[in-house]
Image 1: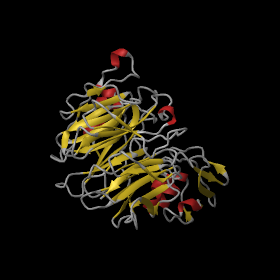
Image 2 (image 1 turned 90 degrees about the vertical axis):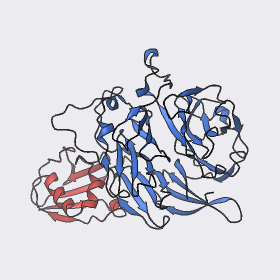
Image 3 (image 1 turned 30 degrees about the vertical axis):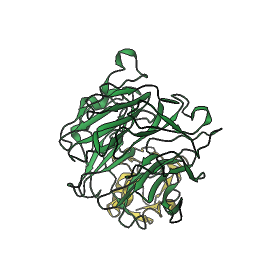
Image 4 (image 1 turned 45 degrees about the horizontal axis):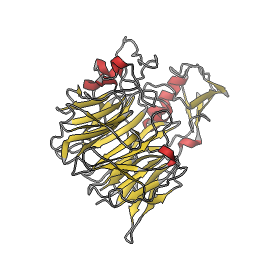
Length: 372
Length: 89
């Protein structure tokens, strides 16, 4: 059971803590005034990593080894120079050159217990970086970046594509799953030496009919792997919910998802791959809660049915949107939290049956992650 | 020598005091400054060495023309100001 939540927002990082008398409240803060886009805890040594995106000064990365009291700036991953004499890569949708420059750190994941110091970092415009020294240095994985399919990826919501989800298989740390918007789901079984796109079964409504099944242009918004059943993964996709029970070899669309198939975030129960949570919104062009009601949906039977959970959540004129990294479940599977673009943060201690509002005045929330 | 001054807004992230530096282009002057202060480089320039999108450099009050190669020429005693733009906040 986690007692600490990292809330990364447009104007700072907030540590939200479980109080001894019950309830959760904001405690420590960091980087107040700065755009903190992601904050994660490495469960192996409890160190914290915070990614910032300064409007003027660019993307930065910091690490804390003392629970957030002090921070050390790490070098942000750097893209190499494109090969001399090479033609610019042109984005298929925008027609503009794809920059070999770091635009955003969009995902961070710790390696396995057998890989001390290993971190994975997914970025916009689509590069995956790896560190073996806790972020002191980074290497772009050319094994993925140089694939011809990568140049066909395009931005979903952002100007350029990006790797937003990174799942390291607890059984085998060399197996890593990367979710790309818009570029499908890519899986390595050999620690990044080779990659395979595994998004068969996904469907892209935003493409002409003959391209809708193309794995390489799918837009999974978020990929979540069940830690105890790693072959079970859930995807909240741009136009639906998809699930695999065979490690990504085949994805099945979940039909009849109330109240909407659209959303950004998904969380899967740490022990039970049949249980997952979503925060839906009206698809596609509107992206606001259905009927002004903030709800969380939960399935406990692999998507056959859903409970629409609303206790403690606003049910009239509420326009909170929850981004893909802004929902999390802790290691017990009972405590969840989500934060919204309108600055609200809610926690549930009973798997989503009831929610408690921690704050409604935060800056727009980018990411919510339980810390160990 | 050009006199190089950085926006005060950098101070809370990285120390970057004013400097008098030899060099006949903005690039050569900044290379010298950041050669002694590698931590500050990434706050002003991206990994290709281009000026970040929401940063501005002025020479004697005029914005530079070459934001990619930083090839604008400098004369002795030119004043170079590295500022954050009003956009990007």
